[in-house]
Image (tube, rainbow, N blue to C red):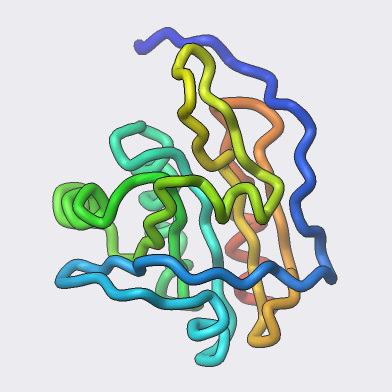
Length: 168
């Protein structure tokens, strides 16, 4: 068993249910290529589950996507990730971990800051990543469901999240 410390995270200022999620434009990566896309481009096509996760090499990213896949969430709603990983790292992650999703690359963590969920990594000067969080957005970018980690590692209640997607 891997031993690690549970870390309490500071308060956050994430959008809540009923708020409009901030729009942003970043490289959106799939299995074949990437191109700049905005969140509003995606919500124009329907509801979106926005999944903020740690960098691609950390186990929580794989764990989150596996749990979403196992509950059929990506088939029920557009599910897209956001992390500090580069487009190159995202392409490798999608291929190696067999993740069927698209991922926004946000290496500077600007989107995390806009969402109030940035997390400065202990012992890594100048490195800020995304606090694990999920936002279920309708086609107007209105937050319908939100979960934000208050400690690391922490994960959403996947069954509750799947129910929220089904109710959308």
